[in-house]
Image 1 (cartoon, helix red, strand yellow):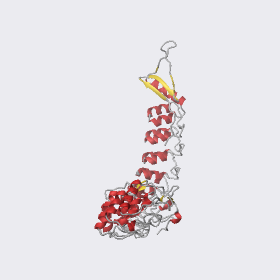
Image 2: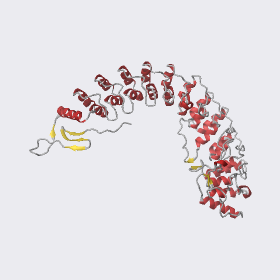
Image 3: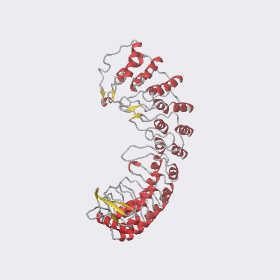
Image 4: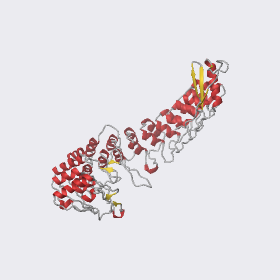
Length: 531
């Protein structure tokens, strides 16, 4: 971002200098329209241009830079011929050479250099002309500046090398010129990132190949364990991923760092970012379809990528490629993926739905994803496998688990009912409670789904099962009244639905359901340990 600065504005029409504006104040030029009568000064042709240039030099110390910024090259030439200084910078330190490089004007760059422009002039942000040429990938300008003595070893504010800037731009001539000038191929910035990493992240296959030929370390690791391969995977650069894997890299190696727990491996990282074509290429290269480097596998990750929680949660990734998530799931299982793989280490805490032990089927039920459920059934999924707390897909679909303030379930109430109908058709029992005492009606209360409460009552759910306190002392009615973890969140419609059902079933409705419950439940000392 460049600082704005005052410019000198002049209105010229048919050789008539009507007025000039300096620093926002207009001053009229009086001519000879009669004694004491104001009138325009008439200046014609070249004389008018020369007068304007002389006035500009007088009014601005950076007239040459101003002309370069506006791309007025003829005016710039006249200014140079009139003796204007090529060294003067604008308020933000931008010189005429900076602007000529930004405009990509090699001839003007050469003219300015011959006129004494400083090849390594820095603006107020420490940016040099060479950095601008590298960022633009302008090979001719990079070579031109290097021949004029530009420092190829200069660094940016974050320690980035000129080679890194050129590699990110993806133009071979600029990269070649810098390598020929002796810039170290593995020079890194403050985050220990290299030119190979930047080129890989942008998917510049030819530049990646050039850097590898120049000896770039394909196994170099940046802060937090990022490698060129992981950067390429994260951005969905499939061809770059194939090229890097051809250098003998381990396709299953997770992101590792001395100061952090292990991160995702390439396959999981590709799925988490919605790059299913890249993930497919990794499977073709030998990726383990059942690996769980962070406690979850690629099949589990597909569920939340397809349908993340709503509200204040993260949106789904943009993704890339033409391979859809369902087609990828089919491919994953065909290549040895366990359709019933249970999540090794997931969420398990105070009033949460425990994801530890979940299969992809249970997770898909939780998000109301009937299309994925049907595919998993086709591929051999067992719908009866519960999570580590004994919660089946029924409780997941019904909404068990407090999402917390500001979050909403991934699926809608109508989708939850549709999934429950399918599960019941598969023989799953709706009258179940898990080890935490959670039931389907508790789930409906958590999600404020009064229609689901009516549906469950119509399917014959037994009050002696659901009208009881869970592990945290909450009945469905207490939850509906807002007594749960986080902000106090009562829901009138859900309360009314529960009370109608309770009256119809002859159940007593307590006057103050939450009397013995901490209203704003933040007592983390009661949070069970992660499983």
